[in-house]
Amino acid sequence: QVQLVESGGGLVQAGGSLTLSCAASGDTRSSNFMGWFRQPTGKQRERVAIITASGDTDYADSVKGRFVISRDNARNTLYLQMNNLKPEDTGVYFCKDAIWIDGSLHDYWGRGTQVTVSS
Image 1: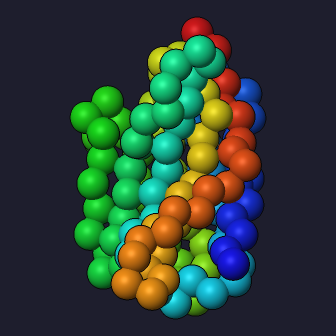
Image 2: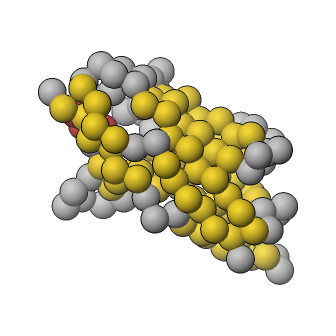
């Protein structure tokens, strides 16, 4: 089993910055990729950024140039540095870990952390 716990959310003014963390515990040795997703109130969950086990990254167009995803494998921690935040970045941010188990990919999710950007 894998457990993911997000932290670092909060209330920030537009133009400000926040750094989210996701601490992973359990057997994460076969992680394929980790990522950050967000869900604005009343809307569907959307992918923000992912990072593969080899360090390749991919970002949603809406956050390119403003957000940076990184992972510290020694600490089993995923980060999301968010700069120049906009009100449309508001939502619950979730951490995901996709792990290979017996030849198939299993998704694990954290419970989320709220990010609110005021205008």
